[in-house]
Figure 1 (cartoon, helix red, strand yellow):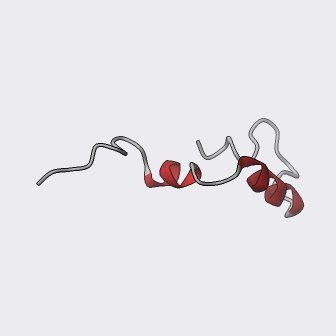
Figure 2 (tube, one colour; figure 1 turned 135 degrees about the vertical axis):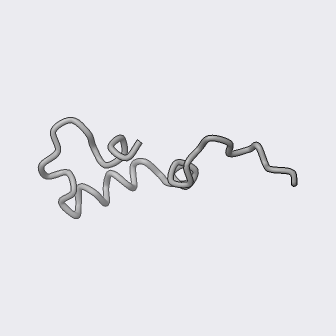
Length: 48
């Protein structure tokens, strides 16, 4: 059985994040109140 080595070692979440627009994620997070109590991590850098 041959395995693909293209995404070796990368979680599925990290693979999906490559297709997201960073500015749009931060805009939606700010508009919905997700950035209200943040101290050091914003919505883009926190899950990484």
